[in-house]
Every structure is written in structure tokens, then in C-alpha cells.
Length: 458
Ligand code: GUN
Ligand code: ZN
Image 1 (cartoon, rainbow, N blue to C red):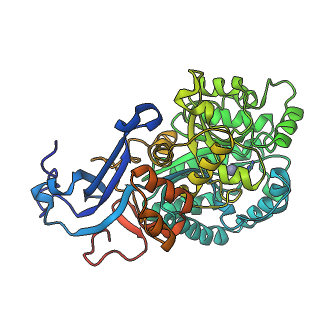
Image 2: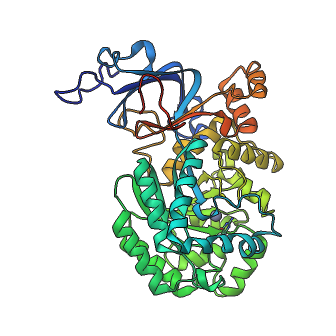
Image 3: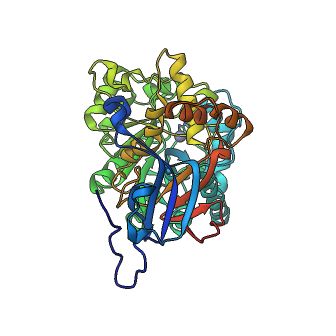
């Protein structure tokens, strides 16, 4: 066990800039695989932070001597977790949640595309980026993989706003060269060049990453998907994000557009878009063959339950993604909000929707597994697990503090909770942004905006 906070140099008076106290919860792996051993729950815990990172984590009574004089932030019985990671969300849709359409394709035409066209205006995008990132933080989300619009400058504004906050953000300019309004279309060549310029400007700068982002096979033709594949080949540490197998109507249209492909997954496969850095949103209607191929490639399927219920896309079956599924290969699983098809920015509320979807499918999503997915699981899907996802020395101090008694109903419910699973399930099913007491990024409390009286986290 570490008994001291490693010295930060000759000028340091303390081994820590700041100490956060509370009930520490994190996960060493998927509880569905590792059982109880995956869960760490320290009732009177302490995190020592220095230089934006965690330098010590454990029981408060064991806090190293050289960290004891640091300013403190005491969250009492609140839960301190690694900040939530949202692996699929649309920045330009930040204010169109709850726009009612007749299914995905109608919703895109009537709501998403007209709203995204406004991002041709860089000032609009800049203001939206501030609001969008503040909304993420207000809901406890400290890292994300984000679709921007087709406009290069809108992506620039988003990256710049994330950089100012010190956030771990991966994002990309949407590639879309057909079946969309003219104002939102690029072409294979111009889309590739813009992606390359954005990658050169932002990828690896601070905590930012680039994600090549073909929207889906309906709005990108063969030449553009091939260009995205080339991009991925020449930038192997970049991410790839797209949509896959969300609705039956979409799948039928992809079948008409790519008649030579075996199935929807095969379309992306033929253009080199499957791989360990590739995240496919939805995957509601995948066949066993598609899941096996995605698993073989090391890719991730991102379950977006509030979006699937709101748009009426279908009931995702979590069964094949559970270790007890009987040995059949499954892709990595992540869980996301998919704002604005999704209806909540809250990862806990999204986990609640995933829980209900699983129930309707005759499956079970244990609350500990759900919170593992929203933290370390999603961080792994983004290839960010070395920096975030756990409360471990060396990781960034990206934290969310949750109050299990945030509302009168939650307080009453909490009085009956006996186990950690009870507490987490209540937060998933009854929680929203009111449960978030604070969000910290790189050792600074960014939500609410004012730090505590000791200056800890400012
Ligand atoms: N498929 C292609 N684009 C989108 C989008 O913006 N939202 C959702 N939910 N699905 C999509
Ligand atoms: Zn989406």
C-alpha cells in the first residue's frame, strides 16, 4: 500500500493540492465477469489530488501524513465516482431532445437536419458548444465521444470549448455526401481533407482525440466510406464512430443501397471501418453473424436506450452481451445518451432506461454492472481507460459526486436501501441532474461553477 503522496517537487508544501472526502465507488472490471471483486466501495474514503490527477485513494483514516494538511472538500455520505463517460452524443442536437417524429428517418429530415444546418454559422456553434458542455457537466458527464455537424468550423469550436475546460473529448466532423439537404453535404474528397485538418489541429492536443465520423450508410456513399476507411488506416490511433442497425426501415434502405453486401455490418466491414477503435451506435437489430464479426474486430456496440424508446427503434437485447450468454462472441458493450434522439443527458437515467429495456426483454442489468458501463466500461470503449474510469493514482481527477438523498423521494427511498445495488438502482430509476452534487475535471470543480469554501477544486 502507498503510504505517502509522492512529492510534487521541492516547492510543494503538501503531497496534495486538495483532498476529496466521501463514499468512494469504482469498478476494477465488469461485475458480470468478476463478481463482487470488481466493486470497490469505501464508506469513509479519501482521494488526494495533485496537478489535476489522483495521487492517492483509500480509506480517509489511512490518508498519508503529507496529504493531511491539504485543503479538503467533504461530501459526507455522497458517492464519489469516476466522472461519467458518454460514448455517443450529438453536439448540434443539444436542444432538440423531445422533438416527436414518426421514426428515425422522418425525425432526421424534420428535426435533426434543419437544426444541424444552423451550425454553418461559427458563432452559433461556439455559443452552442458552451451550453452543450455545461449540460454534460451538470449531469456528471466529464468525457464523451461526440458527433459534430458536417461543418469544419463547428467542430473547431467544440474542440476549443472542451480544451478550455480540460475535458477528455473525442469528436469528429460528420461525413455526409448524399440523402441530406445540400447545405449539409460534403463529398468524399472535401470530407476527407477537412477530417485530416481537424485531426492535425486537435488529435492528441491536451485530452482531445479525433474520431472519423461517417454518419451512416444511408448518407455516405461508397467513395466516402472508402475515404473514411483510408483515414482510419493512416491514423490508427483515431476513433471511428457511426450508426448501425437502429431501425428496420433504415436497414431495408441500406439493403437497397448496398445490394452486394451480406448485411448492414458488412457494408462498413468492406470499407475497413471495423476495428478496436470503432464504435457503432445502436445495433438494435444485429444478427448473430454481425455480432460475431464485430466481436472478432474488437469493435464496440453502443446501446442508446432512451433514444431507442423515444424514436420507437426497437428493444435492444442485452442478453448476448452478458457473460452468461453461453460463450458466443459478443462485441464490447457501451451505453450512451444519444442526445437528441435520446431524452436525457443523465447517464444514470440512461442506465435506468437500459434496465427497463432489459426487463422487457426478459433480461437483467445489475446496477453495479450498469455503473461499471457508465464509467470504466465506456472509458475502455474510447481507449481512455489509462486516464479515466477509475479512482486510481495516476488517473485524471475527473469525478462525479452523487447525492443519494437529492430529492424528497430519493431521501425516503434511501432510508430503505440496504446494499450498494439498492442505492445505485434508486439513482438510475429516480435520478436526473438533481443527483449531481458536483462534477470535477482534471482536479477542478467545474459544476457547480463555484468551488467550496476551502478553495479545494478551484
Ligand atoms: N442515424 C443517423 N444519424 C442519426 C442521428 O443523428 N441520430 C440517431 N439516433 N440515429 C441516427
Ligand atoms: Zn446518434
